[in-house]
Image 1 (tube, rainbow, N blue to C red):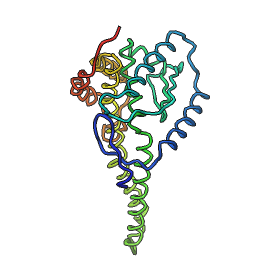
Image 2 (cartoon, rainbow, N blue to C red):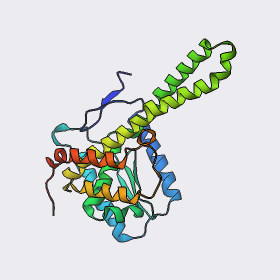
Image 3 (spheres, helix red, strand yellow):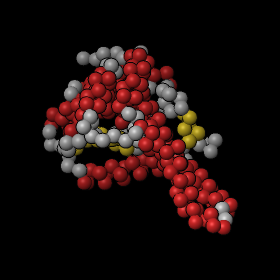
Image 4 (cartoon, one colour):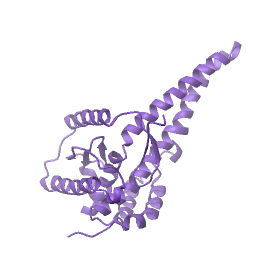
Length: 256
């Protein structure tokens, strides 16, 4: 476990990595190909060019970290636009990025799109996919050990409650470990993404407006309580970003 420890870029958070970079990239490529086989790709030349332009600038920033802030990734970057009215985007391990056209009315500008792509590229840069798989492995081992301990210690009439107790152990691992880690990774991607967009020449202050518009777009839907969600609440996210903007502004140099 100690040998598998790494540190996330920018934040320096300790990570457990039980999945190799090669395995992670292979799984990311396979998942990416499956998504592209099912989803309709955009034929809007303007939207496609915008996603490609912003993506390449963010990727270039990720590959040239200042003062050895992180290890430069060896990714084969791809940037696709999916023609679907969903405010969504993703980056799979290995640098495979997709942006849904439903997101563009929320991002509005090139800098606004850089907020989202910076966040997604940050996930790949910090190897959050491999970390999540590693966390699931660790949690599975812990749940199996706890379940085995319960099975050997619970006896008599109390054994009727054993399935419920084991289910509670599994739920506790999800709520107490897996979900908080997912929220931590999302917040970390926000913070790293601000630095990436600044290094790429986009004003990180644009992130506040983008996430405020995202919150407005989500206002009509039902939201889980933050502690049961994979993502931070919108208000938490916006407040955190306000606190991180000054850090990112140190790297911001406007471009034409």
